Amino acid sequence: MYDAVFALYHDQGHIAAYCYDCQRTMEMTLGLPFLHIAAHHRTALEAAGKNIADPTGMIECLLACSRYGQTARDFSKKNT
Image (cartoon, rainbow, N blue to C red; front, side, top):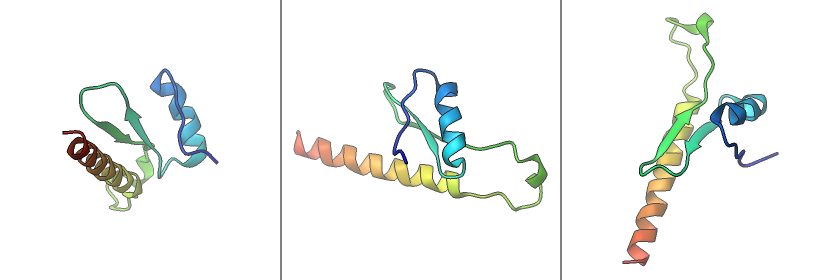
């Protein structure tokens, strides 16, 4: 079991993430001047228009953004 996959190109990282758990995995791009987190998803054409989509990936992304924001805020308070 892994907590993170680091890849030079996002397509390479997606392979590992999709094999592990596509519903709860997310992508975080590092090195940007802003936070970039995206939920992994499949096309799910069979679910389109049926109101049965699984929001787990989006919820995980929002929770990660919240944790990251709180950590950044705490860090800036300690170092100012």
